[in-house]
Length: 265
Length: 255
Ligand SMILES: Nc1ncnc2c1ncn2[C@@H]1O[C@H](COP(=O)(O)OP(=O)(O)OP(=O)(O)O)[C@@H](O)[C@H]1O
Ligand SMILES: [Mg+2]
Picture 1 (cartoon, rainbow over the protein chains, first blue to last red):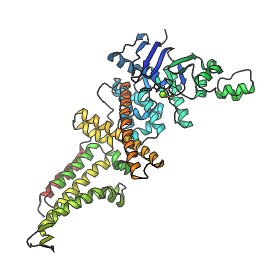
Picture 2 (picture 1 turned 90 degrees about the vertical axis):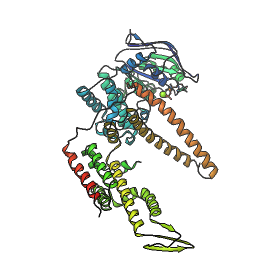
Picture 3 (picture 1 turned 60 degrees about the vertical axis):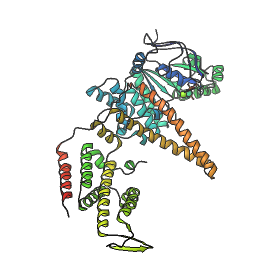
Picture 4 (picture 1 turned 180 degrees about the horizontal axis):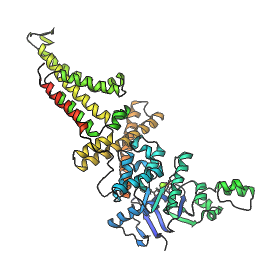
């Protein structure tokens, strides 16, 4: 059985917007899943259900073989397993310094003394936040806030990490750093789920792609397969990755897996 | 944004323990409040100012910081010094307006200067604390003084929210201004109303999301952070304590 299983999940906001409509999805441990879809297609809502902040009104959510019931105790356990990095880092940072903010989750996860120090060092090295550690959050730039927000969630040592648009508003260098963090996490066999509008990145990075529209899943599969399908791209309001556009234009026989590979051909 | 950030007194900030700064603050505060003469407040004012200058504050900065409270204070002191009376009295300076005498006497002048000195000393003591302690050290001090956790968490969160709301309202105001919302009186009132309501809604939504984010990181109704301040060396408290005793003792002399 897959690590995460969603069976017929539906979720409606109190104002009767049906944000998720009969979602079926399975994610393996250590997988790199990307969720794409136009604005308002329900990506963030899906994440909020996955990490237990919102309760789906119907359907079954199975994580690591356990059915998640919507009880308070279950939810606390879910929080330690699934970490969610919000799209807007502003809502996440609240302590008076960066270091305190990062330590918050680790202490809640029960770490103390040496283990806590080790964890803090590891997380701060990974996200390059050490030189920021004594600054108050409101003095940081957007990219720095984003890094601290990721660090704060990583400090809880979640098995599954959900990142909502991790690259929005980042410059090229920051984006590279964030991708580096994702790769490091993949090395540690964490399950990564990201939502993004960057289709070129998805094509190169993800090993499973979920295409959403109006609260429903249009297709799931490997990005190399799905993104060749012009009809699907049209329906989902996406764009074809640059590499595929170029190979098509040049009528190449092989389809390269990344821009780097394309440039070599 | 906040005066403590505009004037970064980095040196003292990083190397002193918060309790050391607090002891200095208490020394200055008690020194100014318990004094019976004007020499002690004067010493405190000069001392703190010299400290600020050494730390890199310019005279202009200092005047800028002190200007607003000082102007209120001068107004209040003036009302103490001034004597208005129907009868003539022994005064240093006196004018007659109609049937009233307005002026100030030896005694009222003395009293005014005395109160002014006390107030200025206390004010500078507060500036000393605010300018040397960043917000997380103040939080640390509150925590160590065993204030209820609820109050401290409220303090931390509201500080954070205030910074966010301030920057949001500033952006909102600028974008309104760029769209010419503040040209006439009527449109200004309307624009201001819209600004206030959007800030309110934003703060509600923000609070909701923040709560979710806290839950996601394992918040169970209690905020615990890493304690980043090393242990206090007691010998570093000796000097400020002696200073405190000295200032109070000096204040008891009638000079
Ligand atoms: N708090 C809320 N209350 C009511 N409806 C909401 C709320 N949040 C989102 N919705 C609605 O739910 C639907 C899905 O929104 P969601 O935020 O999940 O989209 P998204 O795919 O993350 O979009 P984006 O790419 O813009 O982030 C939208 O129609 C939206 O209007
Ligand atoms: Mg979203």
